Image (cartoon, rainbow over the protein chains, first blue to last red):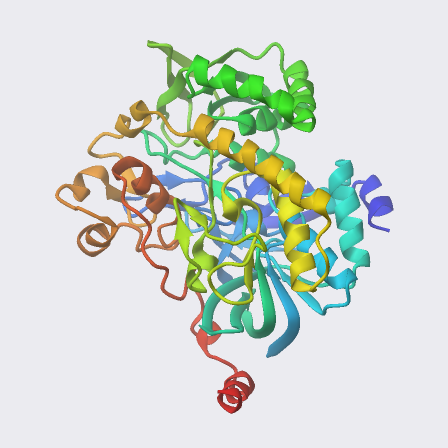
Length: 89
Length: 425
């Protein structure tokens, strides 16, 4: 059942910092971040930009507020239709 | 909310899946927890949707037919008493009461600090690979990879397949160590074939042994990297840098449960039991050994948990993969030069922005935590703790719950579970 679904590429549109991004189903939010202009997920204590590092839920560099829930890891979160992602960058 | 099961499996990579399949097929009620949204772990990431890897497809369909229950997006945050885990799932949490546990928490990359390693666009080697598998656009992107071992080639193959251009592969191991490792691979035909296929697709990528990244440079993201290649310096313009030095086991949950560790791996007996009764460890937790080790140890632990006989062939396979793991560890050991790349103002702890200079005078991890806040941030020292171990020889401290930033509600033991315990004890 899953295999037939994956053959036709389905798209979803989410918003990252207010900007609409359209990606194939199965894309992670961390990967979708690169489709905005910057690959910045947060600012460090001195205001310098940071981006995703480990991709596996270890480093916490890619934490963001997703659909109102704070500190969610973008690398472990699949993109969904109408998702609202806010980074603190 | 609470859950009960005969066997809880922590981690749904190859090791966890194999354990869950064997135990559930033998009739146990099995619950599998994983932080990711799908089963497969890091090595089979995305395979639940794509089904391109035959071995992954076979195990994933066996898993869905096995009767084992799967809870995605679930992270173990505490172990308040023997036989109980507290698990966070999104913004809610639940307790799991289990008869036996198989820990299959896999591995993460070993990051070592160098100037510019905090710039966006600098990722791990496998970190970059998983993001590419998850949809990071690669077409027209220039990538430099620096690290060690077979993971470099695996990452390069994925990037190449998604339209990215791998400009350079820097292997830190010395030529002698690298080629003696490669020559040993004939004992492991499957790995040799895998290696050959990957090399064939990447034949045009410049690769060097005795090579590593000195620094990443750029304003708001990485724009270029400086490499040390056999004693001379090279600069390359690029869009992404993947830089990490092999893998280290994720020991947090094992330590949380009180399992003994030695030389960075969980101590187990021939039945894969840790020193904690009814808790098993499999896969990378035993020392980095890859998919083959994960599958065979997972199957073994699943059979032991279900009190099934162990086929002799399975034990033989385990001994063979252990020999491979030992050779891999020798090859991937980071060379001394990598410990001297960071300057005084290079950050070691990325969460709390602790520079190398702040650690002056600290003798161990505990002092570094107390005086410099090393490892006190969101990742709880997962990244800098491993680096400090390699840089200064400081060993990991005991994990205190929560082992990840957890919501306060997740740490409250549901009353039904505690009362059951009180009756039992």
